[in-house]
Length: 298
Image (cartoon, rainbow, N blue to C red):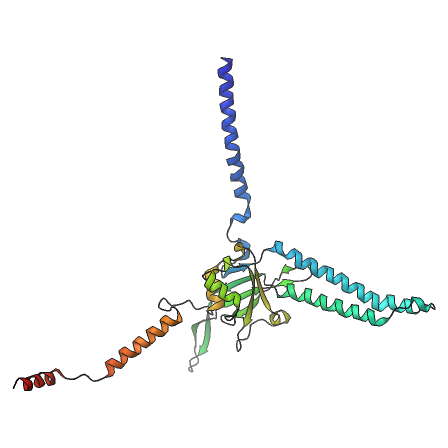
């Protein structure tokens, strides 16, 4: 009887231990926000998120900027305060050549500029906002006003970073559809299209977004004139690869089903031209052929 009691107790404990990992995993999965493909706070009703940089990767550029800032502050103090104070002493052996001080200050400014331009050029998020219909009022010439619906332009929203803590900017840069895109002659663009089949999630590296001539952005300021640099290192950073391909490479126009490779399009064009040329030529009437045959029989 005692033995059966211990056996039953052992089975009951074993069943409990088996359920513990499942319970813990269920609780962790319900509390882990990384299981959601898109964070709700990153999007609103009108904006579709295409790309978001992982904030954990901002530690290195943020630290580099802070270190370069401390270095610049040191050289400013060295030139403005330390060198004049030393050279004012009556002991000439302690004097410092100001040329070296100004050289160090100039080098620190160059380093500071590089470490400031890099985080300001990095793109934090890219979103797509569809056109919203609005109503315009116009006068019909008889003293009455009539309203007509009008469609706005689709827009690309680009969020940059702010210094010194590299936080996402509160207001995005607004670009009309087709005003920015990938460099079609870039080697990285070729790798995405040919090696990865247009899937941005499989690509790791830098992508520069170039501005199309003749299309001005809707946002003004220094941030709008700085370079736009995409740094993709994780597949989770790309939220919608297909839409990114359409928006950044095709100018927001989805490819037609009939479009293919350049060789295929040229072959289809030449075939259609030849067919049109054959149709345009006049055909010989059938009765002439019969009359010619009758002459041969006679």
